Length: 157
Image 1 (tube, helix red, strand yellow):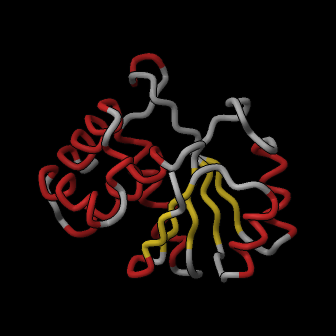
Image 2 (cartoon, rainbow, N blue to C red):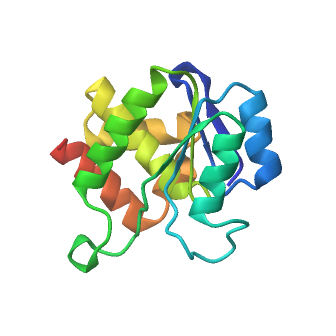
């Protein structure tokens, strides 16, 4: 999934960055990186800890919020993660632009869509309808993510 820049919302959504991409984000003024990957996922150019160290060296804050797509009863994402993400995002945006990522950008896009929908007071149908226009259409194509967005926007909590 290509990087998505939601300029109007101070948020960039992207797939797994390498050190060069993190440097590019820092040079572009990003102040916080939120990583939704679980340490040890496949195709990680660096561990969660190493990524945090690179971000710190580049002058960016770093937050790890691991998001699994397993069902909540198996330790996967639930509405509490969306609320935690929303809280972190709100606080981070006070300091400047934020980049959020996962492996491909789909989980990151779903979380961004949930946060935006909650902020705007959108219902699930409006959020899903806005996804394509926002460049987040790929984030709601997998049925698990689509269902997660609907559940979190409907639940709001």
